[in-house]
Amino acid sequence: MERKTVWISGAANGIGKATAILFKKHGYFVGIADIDEAGLKELQQELGAENSHYMVCDVSSPESVKAAFDSFALKTDKRLDVLVANAGVLAVSYFEETPLEKYKQIVDINAFGNVNQVYQALPVLKNTPGSHIVFISSSSAIWGIPFYTVYSATKGFVKHLTEALQIEFERHGITVNSVLPHMVKTAMEDAQLDGGAKPEQFMITPEITAEVIWKAANNPKKLHWVMGKNMGLFFFLKRIYSNNGMQKLIRKILYDPFRS
Image (cartoon, rainbow, N blue to C red):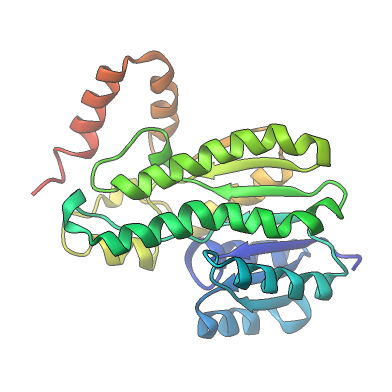
């Protein structure tokens, strides 16, 4: 295939959908993967079948992801310029109020799901000169965030995975970076916050996030792209504050105003 290609997981809505639309506008052939087949079909109608290939895919399943990448490789002549590892799930509550089964799902998708995607994509990434991986982490990876406890921990995993693979994959000619959005106004976020205070002033849109993902894909030397109001400041303060100082700051800004 002569066109550049991108694979996007979690593409049926939110950040993934906005990213697919943006990359298509820039001339990419877009691989869209999600467990939501109806959402994928709707998105493909918008993108055009000539510009996209959809794959029903559970990123926590090695068999599912391998089958999806095999299908994508056949469609693109084993070309993959950009992998956007976006799929994720969220739970917002006091720690003990979320069922253990939900926490397992969060770890399986947000942590292992990223490992799984890269592992299965590696043959086509290595086959494509100048290929790039963008992980979607979160500003909650900067420091553990109350109410988002396990989600925050998995996003820290993604941040560290980015840092390690950026060094390791130099030998393959593959570049790696991550985008760390703050709260993005999506159906997933709304579903988790509908029972309590919504910090709307912190929220950003999927379209704004997609623009940053595009920039990250085209500026591989910058390792972490931190988004959100005051989140860049948090990233800086972590470097200079003591652990106790950061804990006090997080408590004051992201815990006390929202606790019940």
